[in-house]
Image (cartoon, rainbow, N blue to C red; front, side):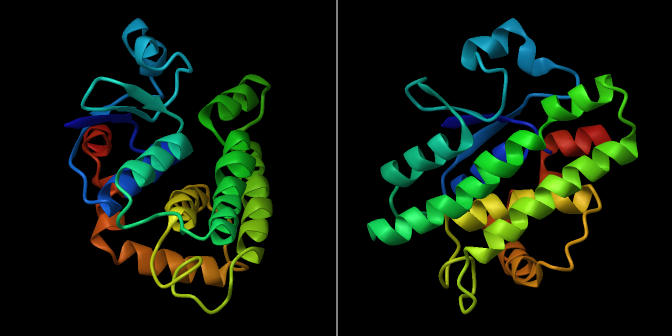
Length: 214
């Protein structure tokens, strides 16, 4: 069985949980507490020298890292149901939207950046404003890329773009960002979270979330 190393509030790990559930694949979850620094322990660094989650250990002990690379492997290895369309043009459009979140928003909103802002003397409200500024900017770009007449981001079924959107909106809610300009995105969010594959991947349903909140 595959093993997914993640953290309940990691949006990157959340993406991979959604993809695994969407594909109907069995996997074991193992928690890496990013707040206490478990990602920097020698044992974890042997899995991922980048000291980040997710890391997916395959049945042959190969280790994959980086959420989009993992999801690409899953979609290639288990092509149905697909997360990226077969048409090259449609696939490029879906990947471009996903990268707005994974490559434009996420690097400015991760735990390392938050820690650096704290070290520079920025208080909680300043950090919140930082997070919401970059999320709002990126979500405007993301929403502008979407067609307006589909049930999900690009079609009548979720794909890679939805897999990236839902974790990002979780972060936006968590940080108290104003989402009033993103009606299309929050409608997609509601539809996704009505699905069992997305619902089971939610951060609050993960075992490490339950341990932290007890």
